[in-house]
Image (spheres, rainbow, N blue to C red):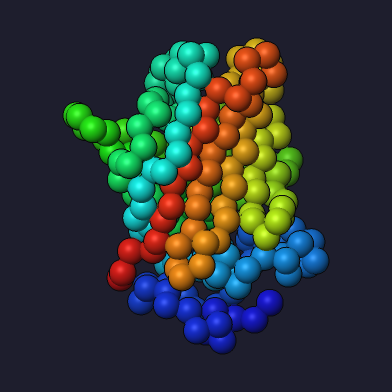
Length: 219
């Protein structure tokens, strides 16, 4: 893979203009090579500790079943990591902050609502765990992620949930989880990309889907 500088990146001034191999290392060279250059840039941008890159967008698709609604409400006990409504046409902001302490990234998602305060979701991507990547949701709860490339898109798929208690990790039984989670990052060209989340429960089927189109905010 060539460097960001050679790709003509428009990375903000606080980005280090060299390759960040953390996401690339999760894929085979063949799979990484099947991604559009714009996705290479987005997932090879290493910021200095504490620096943030911001993506601004709008929710264009959203579905939540009755079971999904109740799973989302129950998840509010651990910080509310799931979408709680099926509103579309509302703004969404994603801020990714480099966290040198963990060697990962802190992700903050802010989703507008037609009325009242927006929903704010915090999580941290850590390059650790059995698959090499996990999403830490708080309260000791983590979700392992496997990464693949499908039709030129970068796809993250859940591979088990664990909870840390007294320094030890314990797997969560499937009945305590919302199901299989898939996040797809696909490029739309002209600086835009789609970020789609889908959760499929083994009994209730697809319970949540949310899709938003983003662009990177100007530095």
